[in-house]
Image (cartoon, rainbow, N blue to C red; front, side, top):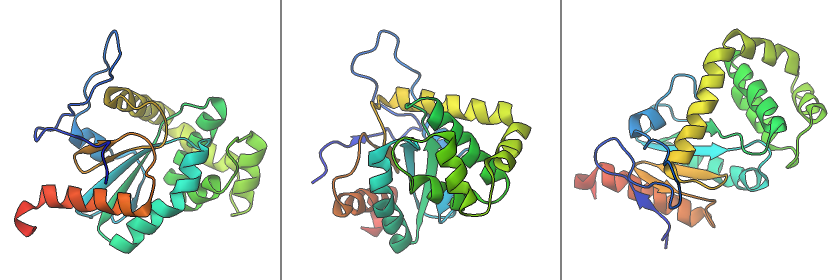
Length: 208
């Protein structure tokens, strides 16, 4: 059973806030969390359930859990997987996110994302170079694409951070599935499948 879920209001705003905060971050609006033209989307872009993952390229738990997440998305076939970089482990994470977002502009996000997720928990620029070289891409080309929209992409990273803080997340990975918030990693494939099924049922109660 999943017991750590926080449901969002029917209105497009989240209810959960940080338990301890002198000045709570603004409450994120659900449509803005689900839809952003700059955010990479995997899975089925037209899917009926949206999973938003807040992750960091130096998060070991994110990397260990990623194959499970992709398997659930692939086998379901109707999930939009929204990948939001949340930079919490420093400059190496920021550099990797820049490279990945630049690769998105080049039409190679998935390749680069998978290559970076297959690395160790700590990333140096050399690690990123090796990962991209293995798939025939250089960080320089991805960074050049990133810099063409650097202002917009840096604003995106700030939005991701603000949303995560508004949800009260304390680390990566954390998720929004449909209109429910799941802080922390899922413990099993079954829990994630259940979360997706519950989100789908809430969206289509007449189909249950």
